[in-house]
Length: 347
Image (cartoon, rainbow, N blue to C red):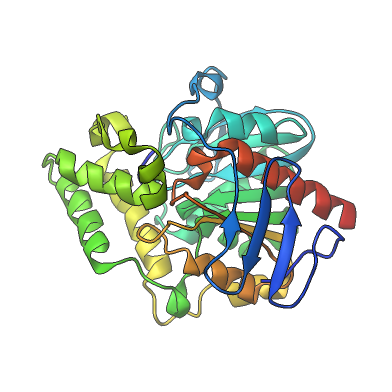
């Protein structure tokens, strides 16, 4: 369950490939240096507020619905250009994407956002709730929109589904962008035991209609943004919302379903994980993680992805936690656009 709301180079000359190191120059204020160690540095302009961006932009776009299998999927499209499908984190619908990120991506892409099965205005349906079915739903949405192939970006739990889409429907996926991700399976580095316990207790309380305390919500926020962000913005731990305020309309059933999908991906020791299968597909892949993501999705799992996928890009962002796309939405958008334009030129 998610709250809030890289070590080979690319084929092009934008990278200096030295086996274990690359330097990537982003056309903003940032230079990324990352190595096979866990001490990368990313310099960026500071932000003044975690929730500074007005979210009304995406919310003001009328949603449409399309029939896919046993469900009705609610979706929105914005921008022009090659299509990119965005799959959000657990418990978040399409309106949770940061408008700054969407604005940058939609400047040269057709961005597709949607509510996944059982969230927001998308129905739950009757089929078994697992990551294979969620991948089927997303592929069905592309079919319904008459999109034969798209770039696919997944965040947190959505990054698991993005990987599964690529594995099950490789002909539909042009490139992969994985944010706050893990390949899962036996090589997955688990969350700290105390945080797993906290998540389990919150899900159980929701299922049994028991109130979630402000202290528990504060722990979720702190884990989401990370220690570096809290030092820069201590106000983020003030006026913590309730779960109902943070996730309006989220049903206990949907929360539990998504939590179970995440646990099955991460905690299945009899499964080798998705990385080996992704490596065989050889899809251009960008991996983004916050260096302070230690509890929601230990950032070492992102390092494991790029170790296994040939020529994957890795960006680690300092003073960011699991909420990295919300903490630095403009930087994320520019990095993604650089990746997409560069890989398009090389193909």
